[in-house]
Image (cartoon, protein in one colour):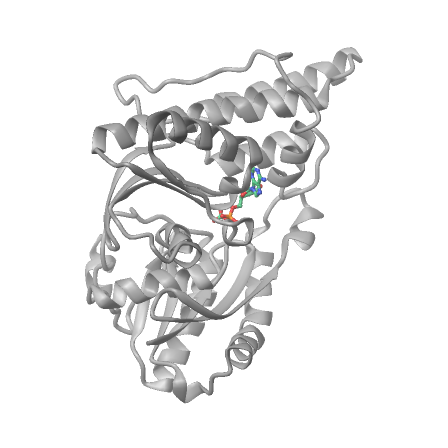
Length: 347
Ligand code: KG4
């Protein structure tokens, strides 16, 4: 089954053709990051407008690179949530038009389910159940993946996502948006141990996380140093910050795996590209005797192939949407098909 898939939840427009959930025939991504870097973060209206401009050309390119004619496509999949709502609407509306025009099913895909499914592409042997640490720019979740479309959230951030925290901390250190990768490079230049940063706990919810205090601490340190004319050890701060993020994520993921009785741990999302977090996950999994799946860096960030991969399993589970399908800025990963349009309007 060949699925033409679209992703547009933030600042990447992406289209891909994926066969039977695991075989990527094409995967094209147009990043807008350079444009948003001018403003130090994603400007939602610019993101939506850029998606509008490029999505049709990307669809053509994805078909061409896959060697497919339009008639070869069996279904269309698209991210319908969560994300910047204007951005999600562009990809979803375009996907609907394509499905309508081709007369093929429309498959709604939760964006974070897509991030998890990137691992099905990288690891052909990987099958649920497993425990996932899904860490991206907008989401930070510890998820028990019981089956391809059956998931339970065991832990989540109460405020900022890990990636958002990286981006804000990077900004005060003078690094370009998106800040995760340059922070990673800067952190590698220091052994750290210089700055004491908060490690938040959520009362009564030990698997939940909070990153806003950590973000504020880095911002305050940088502003204070600036005000009193003190020099900041930027590399040490980047290292200590990354360690604090890793300390929040890795032990909780391991504890969640223990509680859920999972021996396989899967990392997903843009922040899963971080070298320290990857190393700490490797160490923790080795110690606990768990098998670790780390997606290649090319599949950590947003892409269309991951939507096509998850789309296949949503289709197998009967999760096909009607043309009234709406887009959602937030949506629980454990929910299946969104309600009908009339239900939605009564909410
Ligand atoms: O998964 P993604 O591309 O988009 C969302 O679905 O949100 O994740 C983007 C996030 C950004 O916050 C970016 O700074 C972060 O992933 N990121 C990293 C690294 N590479 C990208 N964070 C830490 N270390 C990295 N190497």
